Every structure is written in C-alpha cells, then in structure tokens.
Length: 287
Image 1 (cartoon, one colour):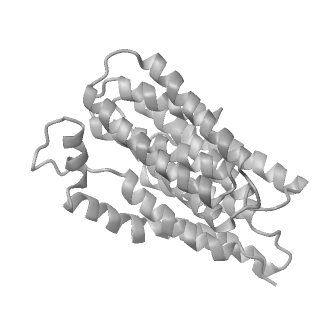
Image 2: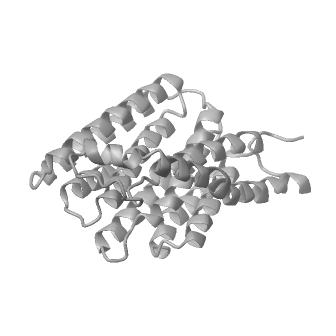
C-alpha cells in the first residue's frame, strides 16, 4: 500500500505544475528511490532482485525525465494507476523471491532510507502546500522502508521485535507530519530517530551494559554522516553542475548563474550509503 501511494504521488507530482521545478524533481526522485528500496526490503536483500530493482529504478528515472520533458497537462490518473501497479508488482516479485536475509544489503537500504527521509523534509517550499504534503508522505514511506528493511534483516521475528517494528512504523509515518517546516534540526532528528529504530530492529537484544552503546553510536553516526559525507557530496553536485544537466534533459532552460539548480537526492544517497555501511558492524552480535 505504501509503495502504491508513493508511486501515485510520483505521477501526480509529475503532472501538477510547480513554481520550483527543482524541488518537484527531488520529490519525485525520492519517491523512485523509496520504491526501489521497498522492493529490496520485500526481497530481504536478495542479490538478483536487488540488481533488478536498481535497473528498474534507472528505467523509472529515464521515464521520469522523458515525461517531465513532455510537460504533461492531463492524464495524471491513468499514469498514477500504471505507476502504482508497477510498484505493487515489483514488491510482489520481491516477496515471491525472498529467502534468507542478506543483512548487509538490508542495513545499507535502511541507512539510505533514513537519510533520505530526513533530507526530504527540506524539499518543501513553505509557499506551496502541495510539497508539504508530498514530502511528508514520501518521508513517511521512506521511514516505513527503513523499518521494514531492518526487521527483515533478522531470521526470526520475536514478539518483542514485532512490537518494536509496530512502534517504529507508527513513529516513521507520524513524525514527518510533525516536522514539516524543514529546519536542519528536524532533518537530523528524524534521521537519527529512524537510524536508532533500525538498529533496535536489526541488532541483537542487548544483554550487557556495553551492548546498549550501539544505540547512541548509531545516533551519533546519523548526526555526523550528513555534515561529513552529505555536505561534501552536495558541494560536488553544485560545482560539477549536475543539476543543470538534468534540467536541460527535461527540456527547461538552464542559466549558467543558477547556483540553486542542484539536487539534494544525490548527496543524501551518498550519505545514506555511508551510514548504512556504518550500521553493518554495529548490528553484529557482540559477546
């Protein structure tokens, strides 16, 4: 259901006009990444399905650019139905092909989803209520994916872990609606919250005092990964003028002095990959 909702939001946001095409583009791209990560989580990180999901995400990105260039002014409902159907079929294929969990892949997926969920709160100009709703929906879906990927990393789900997954899912969905102003502390707070929830769901139950240290360590990693990994990636995206390339591909006029033509999705994914790799050793059982 979450995948279908995000796919429908992608189609609606592609069709709906906006005064800020860059924010709209980031919101759609975040939705595409959420769908890819949802398929990976459904497949429990199986390599073949993960590769298929990545290729499907690239194809969806190409379709996004082509449809954006076409400047759609109608037929949003049929496009939303098609997009939702593709998302549901992708998740169904992931469930059908799932096997033993691939912990590293799932923890990396949880890290990417957690960072994107937080950064996505920034992609909402206060003058457009459409983005406030859209970013909250996509951030909530990414939070659900982070929780689902984390709980899928364990072979057996106990009652305690199932209850923790339920609480984490509710927090992942509700928190973005409470933090829709998009301030940096909100971004860091949501990222840290989802990261700690993922560590609780994926890691072994702590039995000694030092075992509890993995939770503040996960929170610290979430707070530091954005300035240490995300910020350099953002600077690189700006100065390499990657944003204007996609703007030109979409058929819009590019301005050489447009320093605000950049994407937050790319540096957020870099930071998420780094965070995910840091979660892999933290989630291991410590004697």
